[in-house]
Length: 72
Image (cartoon, rainbow, N blue to C red):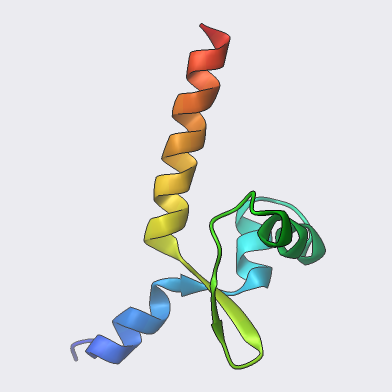
């Protein structure tokens, strides 16, 4: 059975806890990063903040490039 469009869209977002797990840090750190503008801002849906996986992937790539430039 094929996955519905809604299920695909839901899967493309991570919760604060999932982002914390991705970066091996505490959820409170992710909330702080969002507050100071360090991490790309999430989308607030009700009481939850959701982060788009594609935006985080692009941010990761940007951070890797910036880190590589500093080391050279």
